[in-house]
Image 1 (cartoon, rainbow, N blue to C red):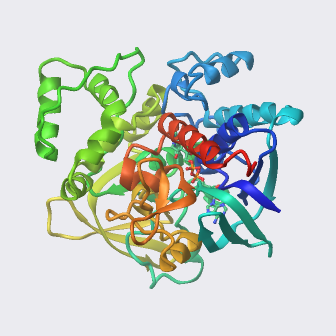
Image 2 (cartoon, protein in one colour):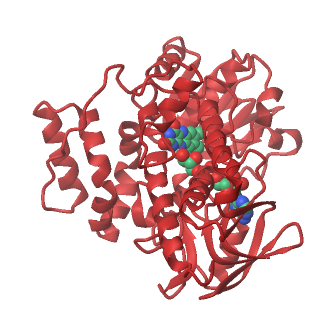
Amino acid sequence: MFYDVAVVGSGFSAIAETVNLLRLLPPSASIAVVGDDPGFGRGTAYRTELHVHRLNVPAGRMSIFPDEPDDFVLWLREQKRGVPPDGFASRDDFGRYLRDRLAALLRNRDNRPTLHFIKAKALACDQCTADRVVFQLDNGTRLDAASVVLCLGVGNAELPVDPANVMGLRQERIVRNPWRLGWLSQVEPNQAICILGSGLTMVDQVLALRAHGHRGPIHVLSRRGLVSHPHLTRKVEPVAPELPASRDISVLLSALRRQVRAGADWRGVMDGLRPLTQRLWQELSREQQSRFLRHALAWWNIHRHRLAPDVFGQLDALVHGGTVIVHKGYLQTIGEAGDRLELAFRPRGRADIIGLRADWIINCTGMERAGIAHSPLLRQMREDGLISSDKLGLGICVGQNAQVLDCNGKAQPGLFAVGALTAGQFWEITAVPDIRVQARNVAVAISQYLSPTNV
Ligand SMILES: Cc1cc2nc3c(=O)[nH]c(=O)nc-3n(C[C@H](O)[C@H](O)[C@H](O)COP(=O)(O)OP(=O)(O)OC[C@H]3O[C@@H](n4cnc5c(N)ncnc54)[C@H](O)[C@@H]3O)c2cc1C
């Protein structure tokens, strides 16, 4: 079958794109969704069933529809969840909300486009021309569509060092992708854990370990040892940032610090910056963007991606109680010592190397730098010149309307990307409030692209 649109992926970006297409395209149109994840829409972030895994954005900003900002809050109220607009719902509930909203659109059978779910992974792109995009799927079929929206996420970063000398069962205790939660049930209550990375993924894994009855020590190793700040329990209004004309990253950061020293709440300034971040990012030169990633990213992350207050409280208690031990340092090697794993790291600001023994190593070094290496499909498309990696290695090159650019920088007429894959162009495009706008804009562009004679 030839589809008008195919959405490839099964996380939040894919469901946001699908609901917008269902709302915007005429009933004569056909949509295929290609993904191998059974919980469509949940993806990496919302597939967890642990109640301790909370959203890090207040419920009032998590609607899937940018033009109906209260939609998630209304759903929570219908479900009697007792989460106010500035509260933090569980990520499991958010996944249920997404499923409910899709189901409601699908019930309207007579007045919506045809939608087919194809349970498969896209393996390769065979053709990408003005009138047709063709993919090979891992179920042996092919997918033909006039437009395709890539909603593939960015996967998980590789381990920072190669543990090639670790043998046998000990290799299995190096968890390269913590989102495959199967490893948790194999951890014994008193085993020592070492988590690489101190971002939100680390916090998730610590809470998941505790919920599974783990009571042993949890070492956390990252270059700066920085952990996210909490949201306040009271609402903070966004404050308009006082930005200088300069687009030098040091000058910009100094101006923001000055504003905070003069009395503005830093959380308000960060929130006030949010609607401007995409534009600001695009106004930075490549060199300044790269400086930001090298020197400011860790600081940005802990101020920008804050934790729900009670989640922070739980982590803080574990740190103060000595269960979670945060180390600042540079990982050198991962080896083995008897039947355990041994990491060697150089503490920040020192020249000596320290050894740390653990039973498990969990890679939580994040997603930002995952680029496209995790995806055989994207690697093939890049080799064939159909896409190009952005210069910072964050994802793929797209234009302002999220249309994918080929190796010569030319827009591919029917090919779009949604979500963190487009971070090189937009930077602030990893969270729901930004992805939902991008998904809607892409659906609008596709509805205009499909001429009435085609649908
Ligand atoms: C743990 C966590 C918590 C978060 N919490 C929040 C929050 O509270 N608030 C917020 O606003 N944002 C949050 N985020 C940000 C989050 O990234 C986005 O909200 C969103 O989940 C990103 O979804 P995605 O679909 O782009 O990517 P993903 O969720 O990674 O989904 C990509 C999907 O594509 C599929 N796929 C990949 N390759 C192929 C292929 N070749 N063929 C078919 N399918 C393929 C994968 O199987 C996967 O299902 C969180 C992120 C994480 C990781």
